[in-house]
Structures are given as structure tokens and as C-alpha cells.
Image (cartoon, rainbow, N blue to C red; front, side):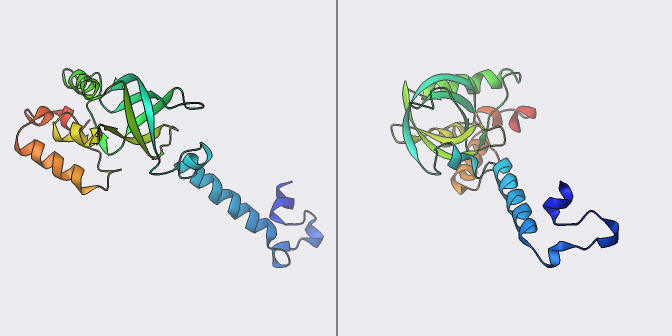
Length: 184
């Protein structure tokens, strides 16, 4: 079966590499591999889940999971959506008291409904998104208020780095005392 897919004959006496004559099996193998690679990285995932980069929608807040994750109800087919907040990393729940503080702060910033801007899907198939409440970028606000740090591996927006620098200069939140909570 593998030999047939690769276009190689099985008999040693007549073994010839058929790819000289037919490059289609190699083309399909490369195409399938590329597709699977992109799917695994989440680049195609948003397309297949009916989400588009930059798309905004009104959602009902179901639960604040922690300082950088929420569950939302965004309508039919998206009733229990896991959303990881784009560009930020808040202290984990076990990093007391900062994990609890970040979670409560996020809960206090959100109303019963918010606007979700979908950025992409991550490798865990969670929606990576930006939340807005009355036009305010909640993700950015969490960084500015010092309850979350910039997630440098995934953030390309300079305004987040500027907000973190201001929070550090003013010793706000997690920047008031050194420790592992500063880089969750």
C-alpha cells in the first residue's frame, strides 16, 4: 500500500522509481502533509469552525475561568465557547493571591454580555480572542492595571508592551513585588 502511494513498484527485479514518470503521488503526499501541518498549528481551524480572523460577535459571559480565560455563549453552535485572551498571560489560579486577584479583576470588568473579536484557534482548539466591553479592550486593560503580563511568544501589538511598561513603572498589581507571578 505504501509503495503504491509513493509510486514505487514492489518487485526487486523490476524495481523502478515511478516518480520519474508520475509525480502526482508525491504532489498529493506533500499537499496532505501541508494541510495537516497547518491544521495542527490552528491556522485552518478557525476557518473550519466557522470563525474568521477579526470577526466580532456579541456573547453572553457564562464563566470567568481565570485571569486570562472565559467561557462564552456566542449563539447557535457556539454555546459553550472556551476563549483564551489574546496577548496576555495572567497568574495561574494556584499562584496566590495573584491568580485570585486577576480572576476577580477580570470578572469585575465584564458585564453580562461582551464583544468577542476572534483572533485564531490555539493548539488546544480554544478560541484566542480580544474582549471588548463598551468599546474598552479588556485584554489591554488587564495588562495596564497590572494583573496580567504580555504573552511575548504570541503578542505583536506594541500597545500591550507599552501598557505593561507603564504598569511596571507605576508598580501596579503584579509589578508591586517581585516573584514568579510576574511571568506566569
